[in-house]
Image (cartoon, rainbow, N blue to C red; front, side, top):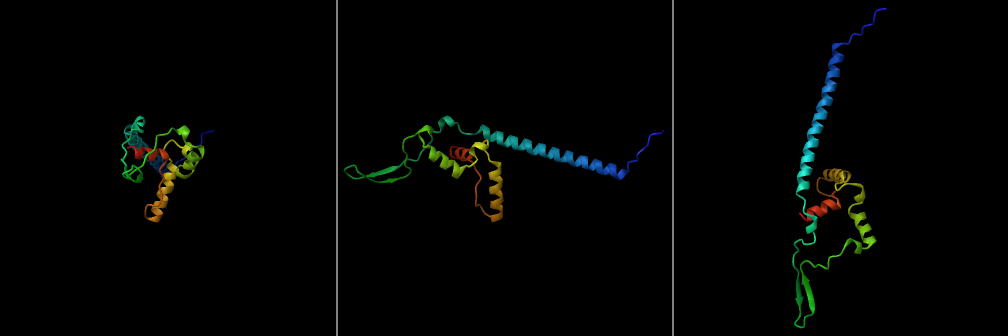
Length: 145
């Protein structure tokens, strides 16, 4: 019995080739964007401040106003207390900070893409800056850079 031959129309073949080309184009585009994102994040990672120098950051001095008998009557500028360790901070304060500033702190690696996307959508819909999406890690890096 002779084999049955199926004839493929040129239209189907052309549509199939176009579909493959489209997926190749999407793949190459995604690769290029991925490489650019990797290079961008890598450059910023190389320029992060040294965490060993966090305690020795430059602070604005405060001015203390005293009376002639050395009683304090006022303070101008930033006021600083002693540096404390993380173990000395009450657990409730840590939990309150996490709840208000970075709810998903333990669930991301320093950048919360969900929060950034949410903030971007809300800002675009409002037509102005109404919400941020930075994490505690990003805020720390910005503060000390």
